[in-house]
Length: 413
Image 1: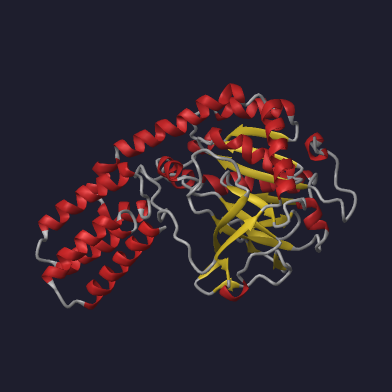
Image 2: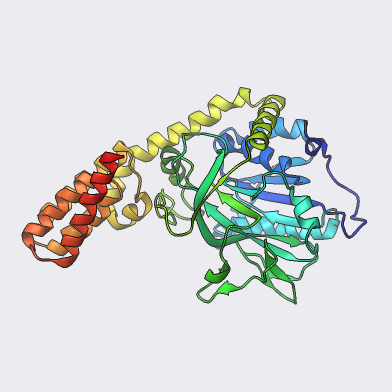
């Protein structure tokens, strides 16, 4: 077993400039099926202490975490439901309320040199698949604030699978940031903090962080690249899990689905894939199996995964009602999802919409473009209808050719 797995809870003050001790903090809601993998991953890569707050949770997360904490004293958890006693506006900011509580405590205790806040779908990943977070920070100026760029997964993996041997996705300009605990922070934010004093804020390759003019928590386009370490953002996992996770909603939002999601991604010019070294990956998987056995996850796995399945079922059962009531938003959320249970609902709703505006070729054209991300056959059928209404429309003709060519290429492959 790796030496990383014998770490104990830290209580003494940091004594050396290079004595790097990193605390990882997360907030989790109904994440029982993913906690064991996520915790193992970050202990494996050298994080000294992991603290998880669960909130508004109805699955068996507490049972999973109790068994992990019993074997690993450097992992702890607590409930954050106390935030729900705050006024309504504060309840919507549960992440920031909890993060600032932890930030205050860590600065007061001085037991760690660095802290990072990640979600349970975010995995800190070294490109070589062996450098630990401590080694990474020790190789840099330990006073630097370092932001790690995202790689967003594709949502094309088998359901409830582990970290894949080929990590792939579109690079994102959004980041997650590791802070030395004594840097002057005025306001914690999701991706990049607002500093109250001068700091040396860099990316993983040492280049100075430069924000986008219109998105200050994202890195400038000319700096965006795959670097020696990044955040693998498992926001989608599989199509089934994506649809299930959507029903978690957003804090303080009465709408049942996560309205800040934009469907399953398509490969773009920032697509990259990373083949993890076979021997190191095998070692990682063996380590995970040992970890899973040690924390008795077999006792909780079926219940944890059944929760994901039941939420998927409920998500699908509620789909038609909300697609009918709010087609544009639901199309945004479910774009690219090709599960038959999803595509059938959207197809039927689009048929009704076409019937209600049967002479509006622009409207039907736009519905066809929507359909193309879910079902090319439906998209072609709708675009043919639009073409009959406007035979020489340049967008209609171009899109119809595009859809037919794509359909032909998929048939060949």
